[in-house]
Length: 381
Image (cartoon, rainbow, N blue to C red; front, side, top):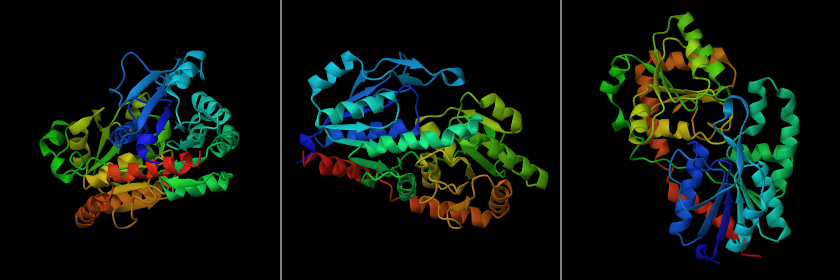
């Protein structure tokens, strides 16, 4: 069996209507699959004003906006008759589900009823979300649901070994492989640094800018970030804060880091410039399965201080390319940042080491691992 024999139905909760690391990876995967001769059809909620054009054929699935302050995201309502007819006409020989939502659950049921193999990919630590919204009691039931979901697949691909261990600890027995991530080295590299752009934001050439990069939502660890910045200020450590991104918690965050420079949402080469213009990237989030933003910072020659969690373990070499700190250790984060702020030689050495470390992350090689998984589960059928 070869890639050209594959007919893949890919199910996503958000393929292109809000830009994030997960759907960037999925679109790059679909592009690679198409170049290898595979046929792909994507099923996802859509909007009238998507964040970017989709790669491949995209079928809109009926959905509704999430309630509350996260209305930019949509929840699919399952697999209605029209979608099932489209699936039957497409006749996939493999189903890939990328989220454990209603759409993903129904897609697995549809595939298993027809003897079609299923590959699931894990992109987000959904089980960590309740703790940021004062609903920690939901974490254990959510883990139980996720365990059942991944145990219904024929194979699971995760971004790194730590996630594989977490799934095994939950009781997931499905064979699990690694689908890492790549980075656009032409966009994210030290040469993109732009002192004039920094100056326009009020950051001087001699200022050490501690950067945040990502959507401004509570589950990205904004509370810890703000607490650490307050601790640095209490210690009298001179620094600036550079925030790249936007989101529903912007006002909440701005009130807690009032001296920060907010660069807003950045894309394309502008994002590469913004990342390279940091001096240190600080990422206290524990919700990522793979630190796309962490890899981008490393590629740009920026040292990283991050939570010792699935988004950074395996990417950040503690003491070499930056520092890993226990997730909610405010003093530990402040110690690591203070060292890099005050020791320019150590900061530059860590940035150079990170740039070299990131060089091995190439998208085509990494996406081939997913094709290999597809062929392994599809060939016996």
